Length: 377
View 1 (cartoon, rainbow, N blue to C red):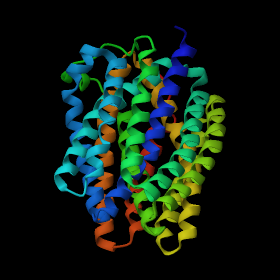
View 2 (view 1 turned 60 degrees about the vertical axis):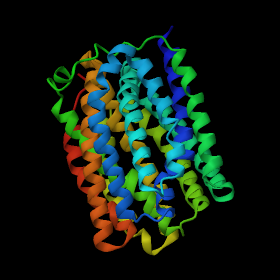
View 3 (view 1 turned 30 degrees about the horizontal axis):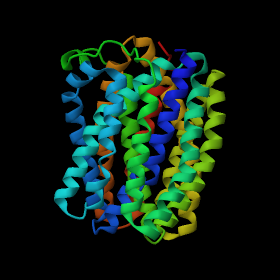
View 4 (view 1 turned 90 degrees about the horizontal axis):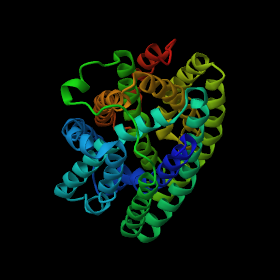
């Protein structure tokens, strides 16, 4: 099977999987807020999820060695398809704990395998365009799926939305099974996995996790509260952001393939700082919140392409892509958990939802220092 066909099947899988995430998983924080949890409590719950995922990833190494990267990715998606039943009952703390465990277990299989597959299937000379295509598909999905998810949640409740999301997650598995086995290097034992770490890349991924604690986890919940706690309003806001992110991500890919990664890094770092400032002031004006959401998507479209093009190139050149991403995902979990806790502390101290995003701005400088001037090998 040719590399382009492998990439197309992986992209088809990821598009379907992202659709289910955007139409249901993307509303998980908002749903917990509607169940009576405070913003600080919800963010602390996500920090707990990330901590559990960090531990479970170490335990899943044995299974990944037996079933391979492709099989582990399919197993992770199947596990994640079962998350929506306990999420629907997450107002009960016991069901919340079950939901946290299922998501942590499924993602401990899924994400290291997906990233290592992207690293070895893609080509260095077209990495920017491949990532731009993935980001564009994710952004296009991010237009339709939030609109559908917000509509279903608002009109028909979580049962319909969550059931459809589970079905789409299962539909994302067959493209994986059609792929040939993914050669991502030998699956290590735990001591081997931690023995030779690209420390600067690990610091970059950890700082990305810390940034994501504010941008990816805290911000959608703050936006939801600012927009009157209406699912459809959140869906429309995220759809508009998806349109912006799609266009900018495509341009960013061409810039990176032209060898101007560092220039894109400088601009995206300054834009990230401005985006955090804009979001932090959004609680006082719903229109400002929607503008901040759209402009923030544009920034993330560039920033994600810059960071992941470097990480994937270094993973491929390491000759052990799974081991590389196993360590990187551990760093991301640690950074994101700290980012969630910092956001929870800010939300608790200020009682202003949008200020919960502000602590994560501290990760921009670390990320910039770790990525600037780095080469693929």
